[in-house]
Image 1 (cartoon, helix red, strand yellow):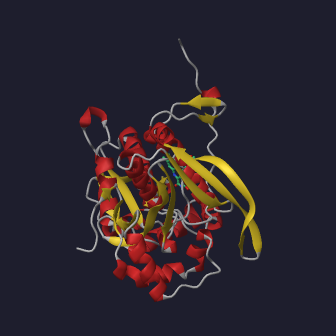
Image 2 (spheres, rainbow, N blue to C red):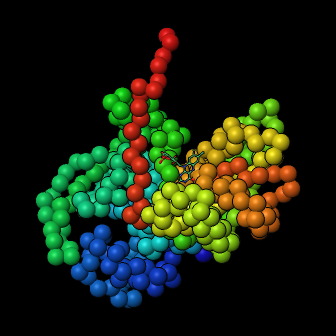
Image 3 (cartoon, rainbow, N blue to C red):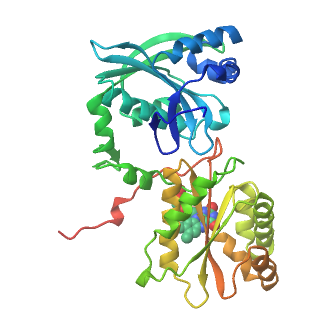
Length: 378
Ligand SMILES: Cc1cc2nc3c(=O)[nH]c(=O)nc-3n(C[C@H](O)[C@H](O)[C@H](O)COP(=O)(O)O)c2cc1C
């Protein structure tokens, strides 16, 4: 066994680090993308140095971040400069591979380490440093309850420019509060927040995905969330088809897109401007099928939202799509695609939901609630 579940989360666990992972760490430490945010882009690391450092770190508060299911090493999360009299420490985290960043692994690992620090090491105040241009990290730290506590002007020099170094701090009470009540300004009104409320407000239609496949666990979790949906009379009229077969998804996407050329020219142009795609290159396509005798639009809508919210909990984005259904308006296309997608006799495609990791640079609609649409009888 390479790693041990010392502190376990939903998608990652923290394990003691292994000195024989030195070569992998060495690769990451020499990767400018990792080094630049750590502040040692100017340094060069050798294997001997890395091994010596790992021996030292393994005796301190440094944990390996390991992906659950695959037991794959993702990076490290650690305390340094710990003082047991003042009950303070500084914290740091890195994710080694570019493909693993932006997926919430670092945030979850840090959250696990913070819980460990407050609940087992009895820490009172935890500090961190972050470069001002690392906005993704700052956003993640704020979500965990960290607050700004200092700025060192132009203290970092990288890529030929100077950047401010920010300090952020976290008290145990702030960390606990972030789970319970959070005041966020939405449409000028404060709201009570929690993880579910946050997910509902965070959900946006994602129209561009990374090619990366989802894990079997993620797909199974989505199916489970979908099946938990309420339905009228508990009829559960839907059937679900979860497609991860990439060539089939691409072929399906192309067929839908091309069919619009004649049937829906306006939509064709819009889809063209979005990269000639209707399914947005998502690695998972969920077909929601309903009986022809009971299209159950409300039940389908609820189920699609369950999928979309579950996706957020798994660090994924989604889009609920009505357009794929139009392919089936043509009897010829319907015959071909019912077979290819194994749609059972007596069922139709009611709605499609695509899920995956949001691609970098894809724009999403800003959430702007219109409270005028709501009225109250008190
Ligand atoms: C039933 C339904 C069908 C939809 N069909 C599509 C679609 O085919 N293509 C698409 O890009 N978006 C589709 N959407 C997404 C909406 O355009 C989107 O939810 C809306 O613009 C609000 O943006 P938001 O989801 O980012 O808040 C659909 C949404 C729903 C609820």
